[in-house]
Length: 314
View 1 (cartoon, rainbow, N blue to C red):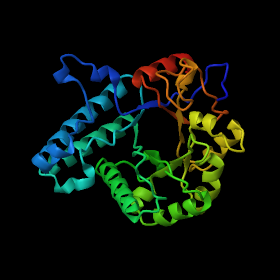
View 2: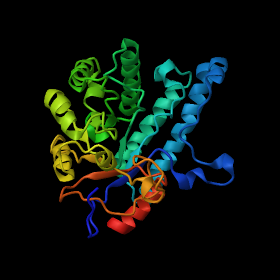
View 3: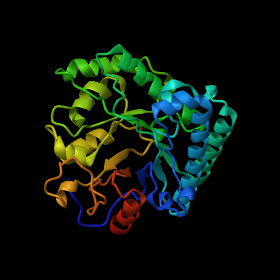
View 4: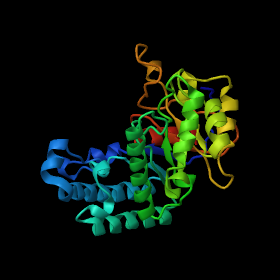
């Protein structure tokens, strides 16, 4: 990871899912949480009514996080994919309290627009459009469509401004064939998903570099590439960091500020940790090569890491 000596960043910096400050609120019953869930046995016993109840509680707390972010100058936030427990088993409209949930989604969306914030998703790595299994592909489509439906009820833009970011998920011994499969399965998605979908470079040498994604995905279906600094460090491919950064940057529409991912390796403080493991904080300013980008900090300390990075780099 190349670093700048001077303080420099876009100052549009965000974090993912958990707000540590609000999660530690005392008493514990008043702690803010957006990922209330349940085990499968509980879901089978209590069903959609309980799933809807937990989802609504999560969305009330999402509103609190949005308000907290606004009060603290944070304009970028990644929503948790766990806001709806067992979301693979239903559609939002099937929940008994769907009208309340939809109203709350709309309310949060209006707040986000008023506050000029940017909300995104990063569904889990079990979403694999390149899979050789039709079942996995169909489950992935279902999962991505659910994320897009949440965003639609929030009235977020159907563009990469409100990105749904994923990894390709596997190479299966043939990157070229796998990327062709991704592009084919991409066409099975609704416009609501396709218009928001982005792809990210991987941290494993056997997986996809920015160059791979540019050649095999962007040049075929023109979806933006999210550049991840730490993943590049782990799996650079043939390009320098500057070259990879700019290649990814130029895949984004000119009117949408790219979102790139920043984390620092835990190995810096703990020599025995894997290189790809994320540290609590980021102690150096990344080089944005004179480009204006939004930075999603993937640091364990969440919003506390954002505040320290702002002090250091902005």
